[in-house]
Amino acid sequence: MTLIEKAAYLKGLADGMELDRSSKDGKLIGALIDLVSDMAEEIGNLREDVETLNDYAEELDEDLGSVEELLFDDADEDEEFDCDGDCSCCAEDCELAEEDDYFEVECPSCGDTICFDSSIDPEELICPACGEKFECLVSEEDLKALDAE
Image (cartoon, rainbow, N blue to C red):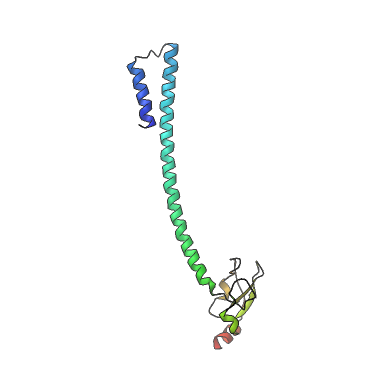
């Protein structure tokens, strides 16, 4: 039985007892029954609102999960920043460390050394250590020289 049903039951009992609402006791009991009815209705409205908000929060959580998948999938692609082992972003068996065909720059945010080759756009660098995006100015000649090697 819901709160609204219980309040209606109390009101029915009072009506069945032929409660005299003009007496002191009748006025008090009648006012309490009205109060219980109003509170039961308000609580029912609040429950509906909470259910709506819970549904909305679940939708947001699903949407956030989709966004996280996109971001983390992109982060996997950004792991192309390898270097010579001097920074925290790569393993010791770095492929670029064996070759001389890469650029080495310092992240302006955290100061970590980042290495990248010509396959990565220097205007769209993301530091693997701190996650900050920044631009690195590389001359066309340097890029052509790397591609030629």
